[in-house]
Length: 193
Image 1 (cartoon, rainbow, N blue to C red):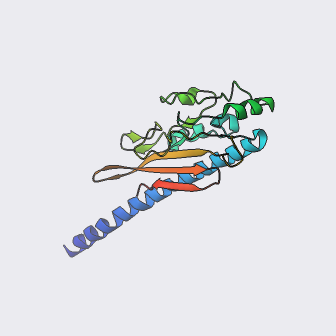
Image 2: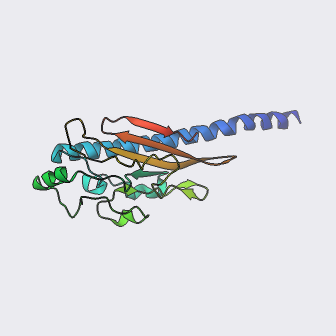
Image 3: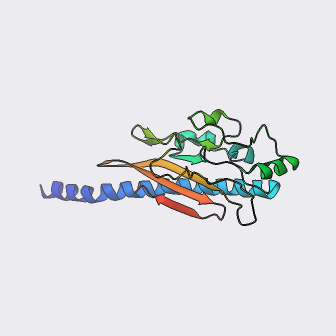
């Protein structure tokens, strides 16, 4: 009986810690994906002097590992590009059919859009999967923010987000929400653990 009690006590302490470490590992996935988005945006900026949302055109395409990703990665429909900067980029060789001026719809079918402004997650906890950019934290959708605005030298910015369902608690599911900007600053709005 003493051995059973000790095993019960150890499992009561160990299981929550194990779940917390699992959630932390999943947040690392989001940080790596956001860093890859940053590299794609930086490369695109060096070519066209602007930021944009057409991730696949920029060379960022994590669709092959969708089934193993917990995070929705990318931009939402509130992310637009400055038309003057876009015209200048077209004059520099930007392919307008592969990288349109405005973001495509975000109704869950955008992975079929050639420019792919976001990539939905394929994995989650239980039946909850982050397959839409609309989350409770407001991580991805930042109304009024332009991606690639070139109005002046101080306003060359972008925000990309990651949103995922990464753990389950007694009250329900815990979501994680991170963002990266043009300065490669990752902001954790909700860690998920």
